[in-house]
Image (cartoon, rainbow, N blue to C red; front, side, top):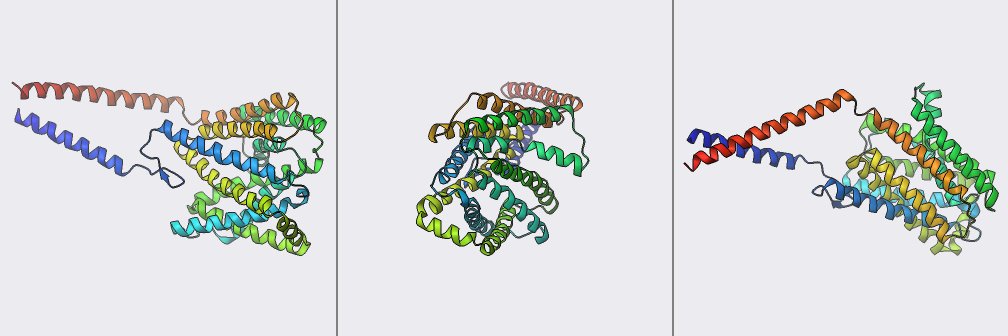
Length: 374
């Protein structure tokens, strides 16, 4: 009987020690500077989702609000310069606090900076020639240039669902753009060209960033600092020689609050928003992140129609729903192959074995407890 009790004590000690080890090795999950590791996954998702909605809705609202200023239409690239300056400061502060050192070669950052500049510069400038909802719909369709580029450059092969997703996006995007061209006085083909160039750069930057960060194990803050600081130098040089820098400074100095002030809030919300999105992907996966960001974009479009005067047609609604359908088909096709049948049965088998061991141990534990009182 004493032997059995000793065995039980050892098992309890081992269980406590195992739980302590699991607690020590738990991955730290932070939203900004707040540790949410001890919370349940549902609460983590809720907190991240609230953060994504809050920061990105503010980001979209301020971005559109800046372009309502009379005469600001030609200064989209100057806004990009200011935004890059803010992001450089944010990245420098974060890397200094975390003691992050550069791991990716400078020549890679020269390319990343150019692509980042193209993505954000063309995107900001397009708002002078397009409605904000049209710009958001275009951004949702990044899959299309990614798919085409992967086939032509990397010779990748895709399944039927991937082409169905691209088809839904193309159709929805075409119908949305046609509706905008018919009812919006702000529509311009130049704006479509700008946002299309932004999409092409965005599609390319994703592949370069992913490859570089995996190869060199680089931190997000490092990539932000060097991409935006070098991009700032690129744009500063170009605008200085073209004379656009002087014009932008003169115009914004007349409206400092509506330009530099809003741009600061706009940049802070965008910078913090991307950090929360990365946390959401790490804690809940790509599907949850895609769901939250897609809902956020839909709410951004609704807010745009509510707070800013623009024409509306129901063709916006069902063409936008086609784009959303394409997004979910794409996410489903990516996640479908991650859990195959053998792996599923293996997981079920392991859980059953764990349950049987637990039942046997509870039976043995109750039996030894009864003997102890005899």
